[in-house]
Image 1 (spheres, rainbow, N blue to C red):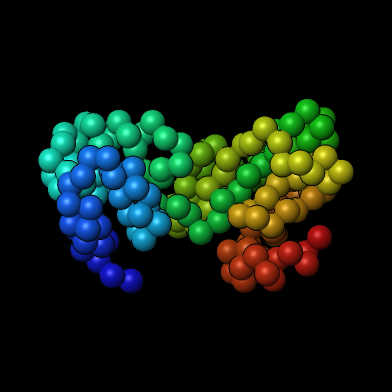
Image 2 (image 1 turned 135 degrees about the vertical axis):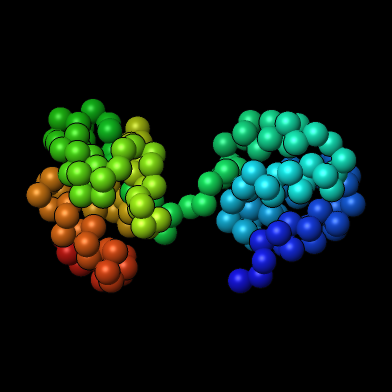
Length: 163
């Protein structure tokens, strides 16, 4: 993978500091690097000859921009009424205990992030969760440690047959 700062420099030079192309440049940087770090935003500000605060304002205003590196696996745990009635709180508790993290935190190994979401559209499989785009459910809290271990060691493809 190329140096992310060289990537940022090249993209900024490509747009020659045209303020009207700031958002396009930020999207391109994110597509290439995966996220927008604070030092990258500072480089963009220098290249576009605007304040870092202005660039940060744009990057934080739009929810499409990621300001932290993504984990390999994003766990979205459903918190809809149906999933809650069926036990999704126990799934979240088991995930938090197994990975030693809170909602929206990234695990120490950088592999997982837990996020409670309003609905996964999988009420027929409640309580359910998605790891990246793979749906798992119905689940119990007791199933979580084995599922996460399998995903961490073998990936999602091997884990989808667990249920």
